[in-house]
Structure formats: structure tokens, C-alpha cells
Length: 251
Image 1 (cartoon, rainbow, N blue to C red):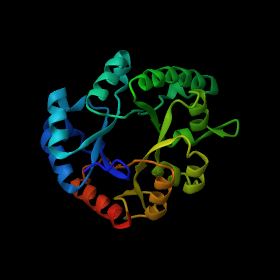
Image 2 (cartoon, helix red, strand yellow):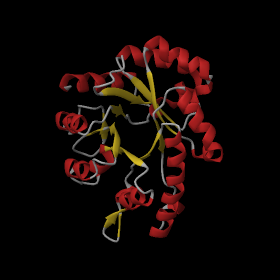
Image 3 (cartoon, rainbow, N blue to C red):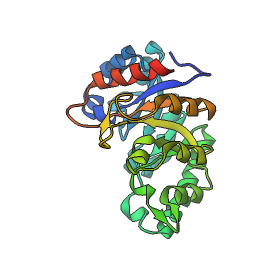
Image 4 (cartoon, rainbow, N blue to C red):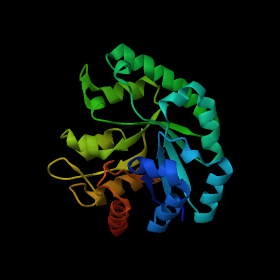
């Protein structure tokens, strides 16, 4: 059940991409049964389901479509992307990556930031927040400032962050200082477990301080924690269940 004034827990579907395309309806039923409040798409065109089919599933399971890391090919018809997201109740769309040529120097980053500022304004007109999902490359520095910060500032801070803890911790950056310094930008938290060898694991099975991360989310008025699992043949819905059970243990 979606909790309007509390933290909700979502699942990123990237690690289940084959089932998204082949069996989305049954997959969403299983995810709801595990206890997730909603899901986040990744580069998907919604598994080929129609608007009516998606809304029927959401109503049936009291389930939210949180966000889509939209396919960059859809930039050619981005207004349609926005309109569809709005019709299935999404409050977010997320830029999945900056391509190498879009981040090769400060000029490229600032130019792309201005481009996405315009798209963010289009999203805002429909009540949707455009976000950016961080990676490892955007934690490189240019002129003593993270590429990530240059990009967000270049959007006039109209693009916000879906902040992924894994990449920050893997780079050896102190997570909570990083979060605190950017809390005005953070709309969503992407949770990914990381062990002492910097390898991805289920949430709660590694060295992520879940208690403090949830405390930060609540104090920052963040409404969604989105579980992100490694996309390989060994990752299953059982890992998603372990993750949400571990999160609920400290909620």
C-alpha cells in the first residue's frame, strides 16, 4: 500500500529486463506480493502494455509507477514520454546517463545541462520532476568540482538527483557528508548493497548503514527508497525480497 506521508519502497526493474518485456503483468503481481509499494522502469517502453492495462494493474495492487529511466531514443518524442508518464501516475522521469561525448569537457557538460533544463521545464508543466541518476564517471572532478555538480548547476538546479549510494561508496567518498551537502537536490534514493570488496549485494547484506540512510531520507522529506540490484544471471526476486525485508527491519 502506498503511504503518502511516509517512506515508500520501490524496486528498479533493470535486473529483470527480460521478464519486463515478456511477462510484465505477472511480474508486477509478484513484486507487489513481496511487499513493494511501487516499481521503477529502466529504459523500457513499459513491457508493451497499454495505458489501460498498466492503470488496471496499479489499481488492483494499490501499486505505484514511480519513475522511468527513459530510453534516450525517446528524446526525439519527449513530450509523448512525459504525457504517458503522467497518465500512469508517475511523478518522476530520470536521465539514465550522460554519454561520453556529453561529458568530455566542461563546455559539453554545461551545454547538455542547458538542454536538460529545458526538458525539466517541460516536465514541470505536467507536474513531473526530471532527475539524474549518478554513476562513477560523474564523480570525476573538473576544476576541483565533481562533474555531477557541474551538470546539476548547469540545469539551474531544475534537474534533481536520484542519488545512488553504491557509486559514491565504491569511490571511497564518505556517503553521508556527500548526501548532506546535496540534500536540496535529492528527490529519490537508489539503494544498492555493497560489501567490503566493493561488490554489489542485496540491501542490508553489506556495509550500507541502512538505519542512517533511512534517517537521512526522513529528515530530507524523501518519499521513495528504490532498491537497485545487480543485473546478472544470479540475481532473482529472492534478492529483492531479502532487500525489502532488511529495509523493513529498520524502518
